[in-house]
Amino acid sequence: MSAWSFYIGTLLIYFAVDALSAISLNLQFGYAGVVNFGYIVFQAAGAYAAAVVVLGKSAGPGSFQQYVFGAHLPFPLDLVVATLAGALLSLAVGLFSLRRMRRDYQAAMLLIVSLIALQVVSADVPLFNGANGLTGVGWPLGQIFGLSAPASPWVYAAWAVGIAIVVYVGVVWLSRSPWGRSLRAMRDHEDAASAMGLNITALRLQVFVIGGAIAGLSGGLLVEYIGAWSPGAWGYAETFVVFTAIFVGGVGNYKGVLLGTLLVPIIFLELPRFLPSIGYPGLTDSLQWVAIGLAWMLCLLFRPRGIIPERRARAKRLAATMLEPSPIKEGA
Amino acid sequence: MSGQLIASIADGVVLAAILAVAAMGFTLQFSLTNVLNLSFGSVMTVGAFVAYLIAVVHLTPWLGIALGGVAGAVTTVVLGRGVLRLYARRRTQLFEMMMVTLGLSLIIDYTVQAISHNNIYGYSVLQGSALSMGPIRVTPVQVGIVILALVVLLATWGSLKFTRMGKALRATAVEPGLARACGIPTGRVVLVTWVASGFLCGLAGVVFVISTQSVDYTTGEGFLPLVIAAAILGGVGNLWGAVGASLVMGIVTEVVAGLGQGGYSTVAGFAILVVVLLLRPGAVFGGSEDRQLVL
Image (cartoon, rainbow over all chains, first blue to last red; front, top):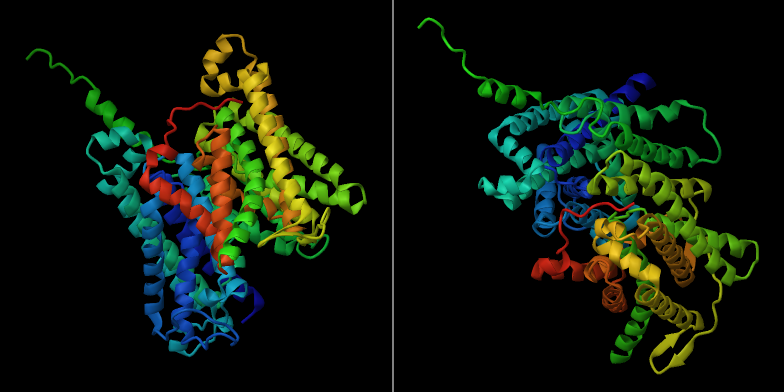
């Protein structure tokens, strides 16, 4: 097992997790127009949930780490719990933040949720061990096969990519379904969609919960592999990595989103590892974030719809054929 | 218990004073330009760091307060006139503009992080021994902050109410097209708004770190939720509303903190906004969707 093989395997896992995030955020933002600036919170919820059901009973205060509700669940169940945690939290948040209001207020509200959740989890140590976070989360899939995580990222990569593919197919299918069409109708003209009899609030809540469930799943997958989770992993800026990926790739276009995921979180954030380090340790990290911000702003300025924009021609063509006057038969 | 409560309320008033300075700047800026400016917190951080640097070179902290405000004003003008206008020319809409300010916030925050080596710096100036009045213990600087907030409130209110520029500003905020048609130089009004709100923003950043006695790159970002919540709760563009909302949120935050729930104090402040939103959505979010950017 060479270092390179390990590195590529790990990257593949990160790609699968980031792709899951980008797909679900694209469903929410690209299709439904819900601007979830608190996205990372739902991923964090999944990660914490998966961690506590793998870690076993907490030894309580004074021990090395403390958390609520410890359990030892067998392998796939922790991911189920993670998914449910993401879905339930987004249901709770969605119930008050998805009411009809100006979009910019709504986005600001979700950003505030993200900032405050971070403060609470950092400060409330009995909940998830505060700012130090949880560590030593085992590797449930590997334990079945008797493998240790560092030795075989490829097994896990195959598993994670498999899940990502299943979710990708599912989400694309959902987006093309009548339900997906009503999401786009809502995004493009809320009042018109409402007048056509669509329940805007319910649609928003549905897409928010589905996206939250996928976010939770991605968090669970991630924490199983890296084995630790702390507030440092889900700062508000993390949400914008995913948003930048969507903006770079193409809002509302799943192939574009995958491209964006490859470009932004993988190449953009991994490439600096191979560059000579500059300045004091940590400077590269800060500059990386500045670069993400710059990429974000340049995209908004020059290509607001992304490299591969959403395909909108089909509906137009259809309308055109319907409006075409039927040829008059001569000599009939 | 009641003594503890009174002490918490006094702390709440001090927090409210800081919050009010920021919320007044935010509400002024937001009501005129209609940009929900998420880089407001980052500009606060910039102001705070400028004040810290003044303290490092051993100049008087009063100069730090003034220059912190000036730094806020300059940064805001550069962002508003330089960056946001660039986007407005490309027909960026209301909502996308908020995303632009978010990108700005990322860039400013992490540039500050890079320059400050991601450290937390202690900043204790103007601290004096606490005065006791019954259960209330306040330091002179806390009294000074409350007085400063009152002065800022009266000055802002007075200039909005009685000067020509204030009148022009109010007119532009209500109906920019009509104001322009009446010969009001809206461009200059916007510039004045950037300067004034930026100054208040930088000032708030400085008084915030005087109160917390430390500064790092997340300083403003952590405070921003309260500022936005206070500005929205008070009704956008409503100066007195912003101050009233700041008082409510400041007091609730400190009372909850006084009960020993430090981690949840900000949540409590924010919960008020959520409750008001649930009970009377129209009161808070009455603004219409078709507002235009004024830059």
